[in-house]
Image 1 (cartoon, rainbow, N blue to C red):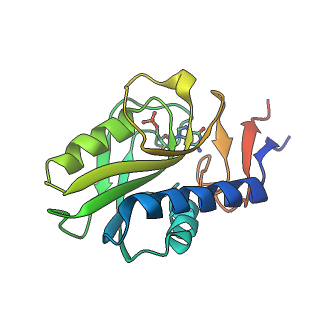
Image 2: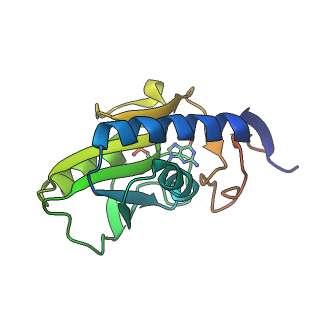
Length: 175
Ligand code: 5GP
């Protein structure tokens, strides 16, 4: 039996919220040059859409960490698989995350990037699962709070599948 996908946030709901978030970020940063740091690979489409709505002068860099591997729950260990290409010292940095679950990844990333002396360091995340939180970590701009279910689509995968869905769905695995 194929996996069951239950649509949870459809394309227009996501796009409207991303546009609203971009407006808020634009208001807060004024004319400052912003470095967007996409957390690979899940933030791919969110970063692309958000940045196009920002209308600010931005640069982009990417970092890849792994705590999940091929599983649906975190291994509890965060490893850097790909580091940034640019120096963020003295820059306004905005981490762009797909989803905050336990908070481990974000907590780790923020501590790591803070040691590199950015001028400011904030976080935007499309999704958050507050019920799953184990590490209290502040998200400055949040798209949606969602229940503690495993979701895919709009960049989010399960074993590298489903990233290219334009909507976000709850994954019910086949037996
Ligand atoms: P945390 O460290 O907060 O527990 O997990 C953050 C990372 O776990 C996210 O960046 C994402 O890669 C992955 N993750 C957490 N929840 C989900 C989910 O429901 N679906 C998918 N596809 N990935 C998730």
